[in-house]
Image (tube, rainbow, N blue to C red; front, side, top):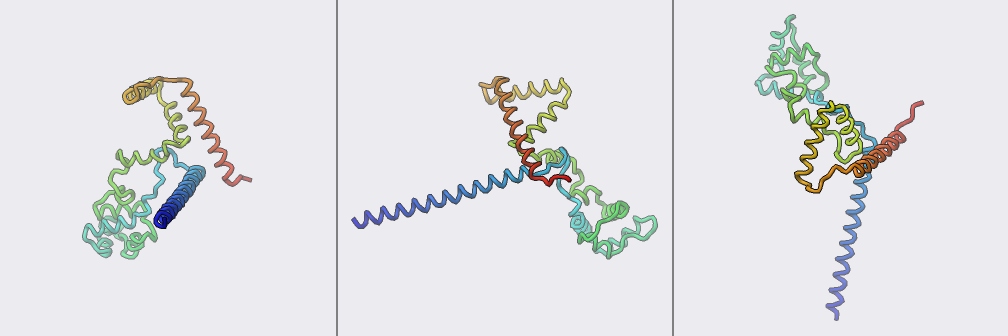
Length: 219
């Protein structure tokens, strides 16, 4: 009897601990959901196709890396910049130190002298890559939206509406072909499409209203 009671007590304790963990996870999940909703409401998207990063802030670090890759001291690089300067003054060692630590940044003229002295491109120093608009980097500029956001569907509709009508028809044919490829029951249901579009519009309207309500009103 005693063992049976102990077993029941032990199982009861384990269940309470399990329930407590579930409550904790549920509470954390709810907090995360609220935070995500708040972030979406206050978020400001950059213009489509424009990065919201600031790679130029790391120019000093990339300058130092390029100098060290060339096995040059700051003083040696300062001497080299004189050769790239039509006035023969170049960039002093002290100024180079400021650039590398991020305390100041080079002017376009000084950037040219640095690039010629180090044999690197301006894009490499500013963006960290010689081709900042290659496919992968450029795609990142267009992925600022979560595909579940009503704003994503608004931008998708807007971009689609701006296409030439022949292009729109071609895109529709491709989408139909893709849908039929993995969903054999797919049909172009106008009523369902209208219903979903209106639901997205309501969600977008609600989001914009909340965001405007949360923003300080102009006097």
